[in-house]
Length: 211
Image (cartoon, rainbow, N blue to C red):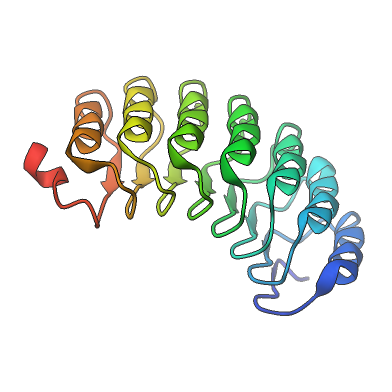
């Protein structure tokens, strides 16, 4: 019985993704699926989203370094509104952008299963950070969030910091390689008065200065 399937860096193509998705609709044993760097597009993301809507066994899905854009983000985010089995999803290094982050932010408000969410290097900026921050105000299950390498500045850091003052479940925040500056760093440091989250800010040397 196969529980883990890793197809990293295989050129599967849209047709291959559809065949895999069709097979997964009848699968009840697979718990981990890694489709990093296989060329997933928005169309392919729709096929995977259709699987997630009814799948009750898959707990980890890695879609790192693909070509998922705004529409693909919408498909996947909508599926998270119905899926309660998935506990970890990696969407790092796609093209989700600000609009796509809003879809995920809305979905995460009410999702009760996801514990780990990585959306690194997706061009979120401050507006995208705000969408994720709004989700953190309501989400009570997420424990690990990766939003590093997203061109997030001071305003985005403020949104995240304010959200963490109310969120009591997040324990790990990957925030490195953004451009938050001293003021943004201060916003995150202030959040530590209310939250015991562990920050990863390797490229933000000013963080220790403001503590």
